[in-house]
Length: 153
Image (cartoon, rainbow, N blue to C red; front, side):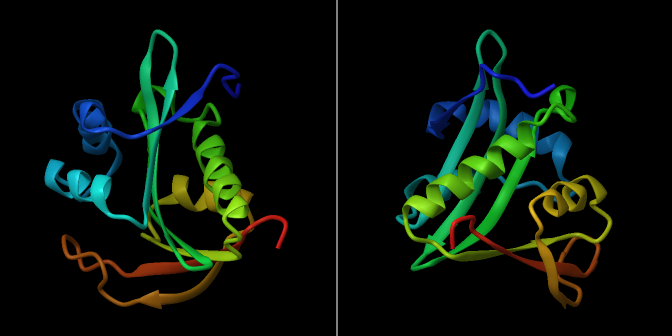
């Protein structure tokens, strides 16, 4: 059930309490408020929230556009709204923005244990390109490096 009334907006400082609440349930190692505030001022960072009327922020995505490449930094959906296609719509919106900017391909790092994220990325034909050994400082877990093509390129 993909919500048809989902709206994408640029993340602002006022969104941080909701973002941090989602962050807390979505990740083993959470970003801090300062980390999010830094993203809001980086010129190459794109940071979007997905809002549902009467429910507030349903999820968010942060990605960096560097020349003709995109690096997906963070994506999360509110715990009680997972499994409804919001993550799919967030990635589609990232892809749309990237295609408008002539971005051709992208990459990300993900924990091998993060099955929901891996399943989401497979829907978009993201492929494993390598491993970063001991990447995650909290558990020393490796990171899978995944790459992807932007539709239309």
